[in-house]
Length: 470
Image (cartoon, rainbow, N blue to C red; front, side):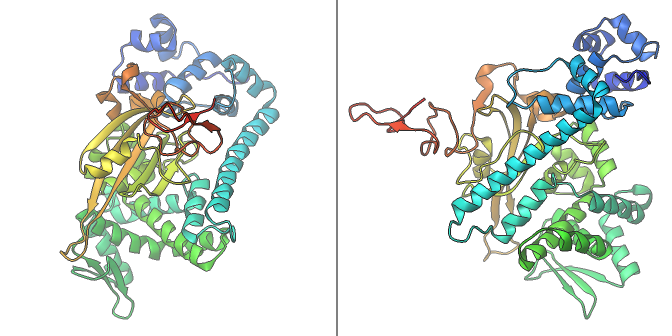
């Protein structure tokens, strides 16, 4: 902790304890201090120590953002997160990290920046590897892959768009803040002379520029109709910002820039319907219960999950989660991870992951405690969804979405209440994909890992017809 300023956080500590429903004795136990010491902290009779700062940041990462912090304290937390990467063999004492942040802030900042650059370079290397594998002839990613990776490298958060959409929501929504469908339609009519017509149509959304009529297909669910209207509002009001970002993005083709423009408008629509500060606060109050959030914001299950994955604003981050959408063939069509969880970039994802079972059983939330080969455990949910076409001669779209967080954040994730986190029998070992999974004893393995040798025994047969050499 910086010697120039002591941190008193009694109000924040009491608020944290009351919000979690904890008695002083229980919170004191978790912080590894006495109840009397905690009482002194809550009455601002004593300041936080470096060890308590690290303990609070580790136990309550979301609430910790509400505590008063200096650059030194913030930097020490960033250092702890960086050195907590599984690639480092052993942990470093929190007090030592606090001293490093205080005494060598330039070095500490450079280390944090270097770690961030390492993570981004690793992700880019995976993308290059994917390009060479999928298209060895010309080494070019498809436009939609470029756009997907652009959002991933942006941490699935676009600050300029998000803040502008939040301001727009306050303007259109008025005292309600979150704009209603009626308010969105009124805004289009009164401010842009555009009428909204909801009727059967061959397109989900079509704008007649000459007649200034926005036609929305009535066969869509109510949440989808609402989203289509919000998309058009965002496209008009945030046109300049969206265009500037798309024009300056380092993409290879006009097609990719066009796709990014659509993606940014979709992002803005979600941010308009679920304004960042309001949504983040409510998500924490509901412990990230997707159904409750979707009902409040009149959004779909998928839209709500996707918005949860964008809570990456500096100084006001949400729960670190991963999110993806998987179709019936196992293709991952959307993906983002603010955790250490990695998605398959080649072939299918791990068949033991709950998302595949969910795709076949729609409208039921399934929960799984999963462990990846690096030893990190995740509480993961998946739900199969069906998007109706609104007519008999068009097949509905079927897919599943998955959402999850590392087990250390399970207290903020309502779905963790349904499983025994302490039970080893409750854990399902999963991998990224068979291609790179090191597990030698998986009964669901489709093919051997590409980086390990195998041997065969003609007179012996296991679950798979080969043995992975360790």
